[in-house]
Image (cartoon, rainbow, N blue to C red; front, side, top):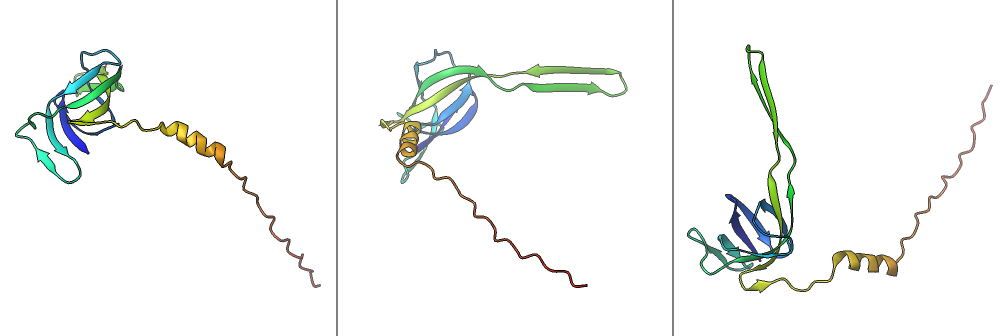
Length: 143
């Protein structure tokens, strides 16, 4: 199941469990946010497209934190004027983890990292052994 949502003038395709960076939202880390501007919802079989939004459907997400994006350098040069300007910009964002789409909620899935460590403990890795190449007999020089 996935949905296409609109936030901050941009559109994002999200599924349950996805982590998305959207434009900065006024919420604290750990808060739950309802994103009601849902443009499309698909459950694998049926696709519902809104005009412009799907009525009665919302995407639920948990705020993981806030941050700033990479610096973008803006360089302006005016030819033959001996004038140039260099400035930078970093955009603020909010990191969201999608927990539900419409009526569907995230299932309590086991932690992938914990499962991976359990598998490695159960079956230790075998070390690869290199076989020595057979030695070639030295060719005798004929004089």
